[in-house]
Structure formats: structure tokens, C-alpha cells
Length: 201
Image (cartoon, rainbow, N blue to C red; front, side, top):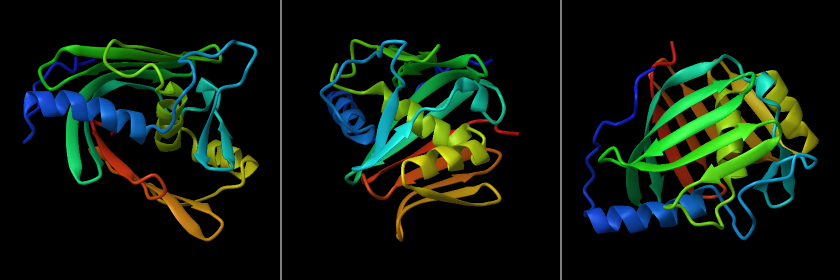
């Protein structure tokens, strides 16, 4: 496993990057105003559309285990942001360590035993980490199990090779494309996108 401690360069000043990243993250992973962890007896969820409550899948639904670095390029409202992550995801859960472009730790996210936790002094407390986990599952979990979970909340996923498209009715709301070196997620409904670079062979 390689640590994600490599500097990444942006065109923004350090102050702009710091403020912008917090703002972007709060919007990107949508909403807001709830605590960062859930009791074990509640099933964590995320609203992928206004009336589409996506119940997070169990970690055992992952398509294949990941133990790797990911370099993340995020885009929102014409601005780009860069950071990196150390990802360990298997049938037992998800653990993600986030770093800024200088290699400084930004926070830790985990999803284990039905509980989602985000520990960070950088990200706002209103940020719901369930939305981060939901996007991760849409990218990396078994397509048949993801499709079934989406159907349960009124959404449809079409797949062709490594391309996943998610619809609300006739409206395309999300697209995910994957190759051996990157995964790209575009959320048309929420207006953000990101690219996760890594070794996906």
C-alpha cells in the first residue's frame, strides 16, 4: 500500500484552496445539518435525489477489495480542487484517510458495523459522511447489488462495460466511467464531478 503523501499543485492560492475545499466538500457530498455518525440500530442512507433514499449497502457488497492510493480531482462551479486519499475497503468495511496537496492529514472516514464516522478538524460538522460512502459504493460495489439498491429507492442504473448511468425517470442524474487508471463520477443533478486516479487493474 502506498501512502498518499504526495504534493499536488493547483492554480489557487493556499488560502483559496483551503476555504474552497471545505465549501466544495460541503456541497459536493450534499447536505447538511446532521451528525457525523449513526447509531448501530439505524441503517445509514443518503438522498441521491430529493425523494430517493439510498440505503447504504453492507461492506460485503464490494466488487473487489481495495488497498491503494487515490489521487482526487474534484470540480464544482468552475473551480477545481486536488487532494489525495489512502483507501482500504473490503468485506469488513471502508477506511479512508484524506490528505491535502502538501501531505497534511485532513481527516479519517470509516464505515464499519453499520456506522459511518468522519473525524476531521477541517471539514464542517454539518457534512454527512454517508454521502461520501454512497458515492464510493456507486463506483466500486457490485453492479447487480447497486442496481437492486437503486431500484428500491426509485432509481435505475444502466451498465455497459465499466460505464454506469443512473436515471431518475428519464433524467440522467449520475454517470460513472472506469478504466485501469481512473474512475470518473459526474453528478449532473448536484452539479459536481471528480476523478479518482489509482491502479484499478
